[in-house]
Amino acid sequence: MAVSNRQAHPQTVLEIAQLCLRIEEKILIDNLNLTLHAGEKVCLLGASGSGKSLTAKAVIGTSPANAAITGSIRVMGENVANLHPLQRSSLARVSAIFQDSSSALNPLMTVGKQLLLLQKDKDAEALNALLAQVELGSLEELTRRYPAQLSGGQRQRACIALALMGNSKLLVADEPTTALDVIAQRRVLEVLHQVCAADNAPALLFITHDIAVAAQLCDRAIVMESGRVVESATLRQLITQPKHPYTRQLIAAAQTPKSGTEAIAV
Image 1 (tube, rainbow, N blue to C red):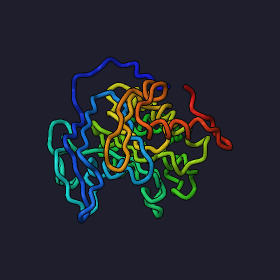
Image 2: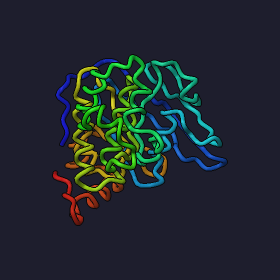
Image 3: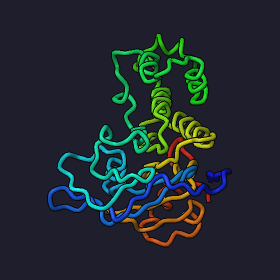
Image 4: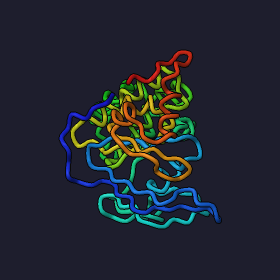
């Protein structure tokens, strides 16, 4: 079970109030409320179609063009609901890591060059320190390697480095380990844990369908089913004393060992 060593911080990084999202006449997110403070690692947990990834897109500012959003999404106090990322102030922009690391990187440019393009001050020493933090080797090495020459886990850690270079107060990770094998998944989770434990680290909103993965990283979970929040608790409370039948189903599935994986520990 992941446990935060930092004391509670009063600063509110993300506050979602009465968020509703519909496409045409179908309500896909219904009256969602969520608060995330600095230093917290919170997961949105649910199966495909639960609304968790749509919530992430609304927070990032990349909702489908035909989506109608009501309610408020405040990042660092600024209401950014319905605002594209480029319309937001620098303080209210959100860094993101997605499931498909290969599409997040330019296949025709070396990974090192992509990192340097975002490094405004071109401080190679600081960039090498960041690469060491995500366990990705040196900048010199990455300037010779294209995304296709990296493993899936390495590409995802490159995406974590790119996200951290934005210096945002909020990091949204949408199923970042789903496409990885078990070993790469574990390493990416370890890197995220280290990153979020650092001083001045961003708050983390982690999107996953797997409660066993969430338990390795997050402090608190919000369970979604069919666009609604059905339960919210610490991971420990959720695993040992689940209240909603849907939560109990998720835990039962996670406690069933699968080939090459470990069942959730209670």
